[in-house]
Image (tube, rainbow, N blue to C red; front, side, top):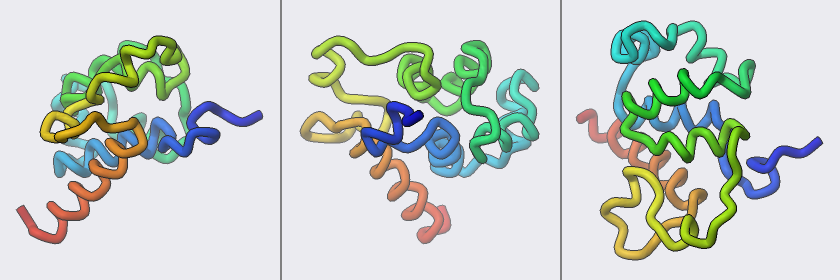
Length: 125
């Protein structure tokens, strides 16, 4: 069976969470502390490595708050909800898109987040 994320080339939930965390330069333990231990570092590691694919909405809510990410987008990537309105395609997605001149697709946002993590790593900031 092929998941929606595979057919649209959108990174899997775990990979997306790793990109968000790395973009913020947070360790697994720092995320655990920031979520008031709602998400253990071991559980987050399993999420990021694809061993857990459908965390509870409460976990996703905690991570969205810490990462400054869209809770709705995390719910979509986990398979709880699917985008059904054209309005979503017309709006900017997530925090990476706030500086974009044009609207970004989910794929473009994911690539921007990866590049931002790479850039920050290289720059050492």
